[in-house]
Each structure stands twice: as C-alpha cells, then as structure tokens.
Amino acid sequence: MEKLWGGRFSKNTNKKVDDFNSSIRFDMRMYRQDINGSIAHCEMLAKQGIIPKPDAKLIVKTLGEILNDIENGKITFSVEAEDIHMNIEKLLTERIGDTGKKLHTGRSRNDQVALDLRLYLRDECEKVCRLIADLKKTLISLAERHIDTIMPGYTHLQKAQPILLSHHLMAYCEMFCRDTQRLEQCVARINISPLGSGALAGTVYPLDREFVAAQLGMKAVTKNSIDAVSDRDFAIETCFVMSMIMMHISRLSEEIILWASDEFNFIELDDAYSTGSSIMPQKKNPDIAELSRGKTGRVYGDLIALLTTMKGLPLAYNKDMQEDKEQVFDAVDTVLMTLPIFTEMLATMKINKKNMQNGVKRGFINATDAADYLVKKGLPFRDAHKVIGEMVAHCIAEGKRLEQLTMDEFNSFSNLFEDDIYHILSYQACVDARNVKGGTATEQVTDAIFRAKKSLNP
Ligand code: ARG
Image 1 (tube, rainbow, N blue to C red):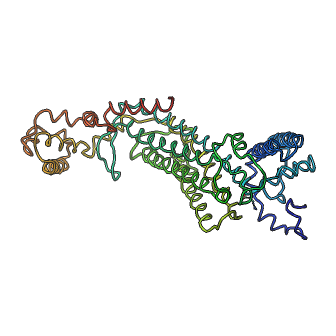
Image 2 (image 1 turned 90 degrees about the horizontal axis):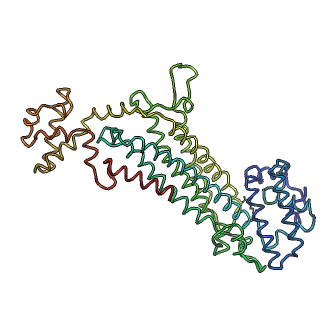
Image 3 (image 1 turned 45 degrees about the horizontal axis):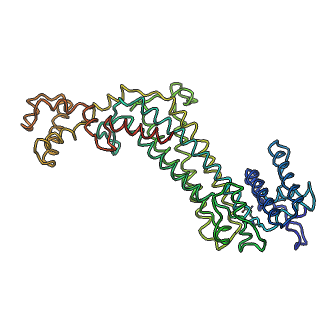
C-alpha cells in the first residue's frame, strides 16, 4: 500500500516496521474525536477561504458517513495506514478522491493527535466525574442511614476512640470531593485546542484557531506551537488523578476486606458482589474490594510509565509519545470499570451494627474521655493521662472495662471522680462530646451530610 507520506521513499516499508510503528490497534478508539476535529478544521478552512466551500461540504458529509460506518462496524482499519488519523484520511480519499486530500491543509498529525487525545480525555474525565458523584451519593446515603451507629475509630489499626460510622464514611466522601475538584481542574487544562500548531512551528495559512476551538467546545487555544505538540502534561495529569482516585478506592477496599473478615465482622457483602472458593465450600471472598485494591498498582504503573516516557524527550514531537495512549487509556479504563461495581458493592453491603457497637467495648476506647474528665476537674493533662493509664492497667488485670469500675475503685485512683463519670464514659457521650467543627459528634456529622448532599445537588 502506498503511504500518505510515501513521496520521498523508493521502497515499501518492511512489514515488521509497519507492525511496530502502527498504533491503530489502540488509537482507533479516538475515531469520533478525530472525525469531529477534522470536521471543525475543514469548516474553518472553508470559512477562511483556504479551500473551496463545495469541497469542504463534501469532505464534511463524507466524514459523517465514515463515522456512521465505523459505528456500525462496517470499517476494518489497516495496520499499514499506521494510525487512526491516517486511516480516516485514507478512507476519505478512497471515497472522494482528490477533494479528500485537501483536508490536511494547515494541519499536521502532531497537532491532530494532540487534539484527539485532549478531546478523548476530556470526555472520559467527565464520565469519571459522574461515576464519582454516584459513589459519593452512596456514601452519603449510607452515612445518613447509620447516623446512630457507633464504631471503634482506629489509629495504628488499634482501637483509639469511638466514632460514628457515618463520620468514617464521610471521610471518604471528602476524598472523593477533592478528586472531583482535581478532575475538573484537569479538564480545564485538557480542554484547550492545539490545532494550528502544525508540525511544531505554527502554519502559513490564515487559520481561525478560536473558531475551531469553539466548534469543539474547547475553552481556549494553546499559546506556543512547540509546547502544544510536545506537551503531554494533560495525559500525565489524567493518570495522576486516576491514581489518586484508585488510592482512595484502595484504602476503602482495604477496610471493606478487614471489616468483612470474621475477626471484625462489621459488614457482610452481598452474595451478588462476593465470590466463592473452588476448594473451601464455606468461603465468601471480597474479590471486588481486593481487585479494586489490586488494580490501583496498575494505574500507578501507567502514571510512572508515562512520566518516564516523557522525561528525556527533546522538543518537540517524538514518536516515543505514541506510547502515551495505552497508558492513559488503561488508567482511565480501569477507573471507569472499577467505580460502578465498587459503588454497587458498597450500596448492597449489610452493616452489622451490633458488632460495630460491641467493638467499642474492648480496647478502653473511652480512656481519653476519662483523662479529659480529670482535666476539666483541674488536673493537668499529663497527670490525668498517667492516672488513667494506671486505671487501664488495673482494668486489664481485673478483666474489667473502665465504666465497670466501682466508685470506690475510681476514687482509689483520684478523688476527683464523681458519679457523673459513668455518663462521661458512655460511648454515645464520647462521640457527642467531640462537637467541634469536623468532629464526630452527631450534630457535626449530620451537618456534614447535609452540606455534602447540597453540594451534589446545588
Ligand atoms: N500515531 C502518532 C502518535 O500517536 C500520531 C502522530 C504522528 N506524528 C508523526 N510525526 N509521526 O503519536
């Protein structure tokens, strides 16, 4: 097959070179963006008098037909035509001959591929945004339903202080809110048109770059042609945002896995979102959470691979940059695949409220409140800390919880203790005492849920 760029060559490309060089296998997914970009470019060329209007009309019409044919599975792409850009141009010239050859006026594949990838990632990031909104809704509705479920809060995975399950869930909601902001900021940097940058230096034609950008719903045009064709920051940033999302999902997955274990028994995953063992009949495994955690590593890999690909490249375009696509596609695909199933797994899991609440009864989780009680009675915090430490040691020896000590026992450690200590040590009181902004008190968490709901449906 004759190459679109074959003029200066006297030999055909080696078959292995075609295979090695070709990106059609993975960039064909950008066919819609490529065609829409070409249509906008073509309409602009006609508007500027660079190509005749009837030619532009025919090109636009034919590109529409090609789009249709691709969508209906009627097109087989060719490896020899290398990539999606040249495959579509080839289809166009096959259908309308010389007129089709005018489309690439004032354009290079270098600004074309940058445009296509930007358009593609913009749309994918918007999909991710919507899926994160679903996840946030699920977390918020779980938090709402469990506003009265107390559970142990942990540091070092050791019981620390009682918290509301809702507060714990809303912590994740905060992370996903930041992810949404990051996605929006990332899209703002993606959604800029590089067309008009040509191969690297700009173009000699009087293009209307802003017109093309506006046609494609892009907010601005790039400011430096060399940067525009060699910049893949936006793809790396997309990988980073995907990595951050996966990191958050992975942390929650880890908790789901722990909570579903017999040792915790805080939750039960729905049968439809769990799997069995091929040998152990009793098993019910949290595979979805585990795979979500596992896929996080792969998305980090995409980020590091792309950073590494870019780090040694001189300006401007280098073919190395073709390696950007599989990585950023994989990162986005993985997130798009993980989010819906992860959200459904959360939405369908059963919370074992009783076990969570029983969990607070071990581990002297109200010890800080006992110390704070003595502080309020005038003891310096360090002394209070020591007194309660000794009481905990006593409780361990006696097999008792703090709130099971008699008044006499309390007073043998400090005569500042009075009857009200029993109320102070109740777990609900421990929770509601933390009525500081952002704290676990029911009032604060209710407020956080209210604000989160409002931000989802402003
Ligand atoms: N398939 C190429 C890529 O993905 C398109 C750009 C090719 N440009 C060039 N000068 N060879 O990067």
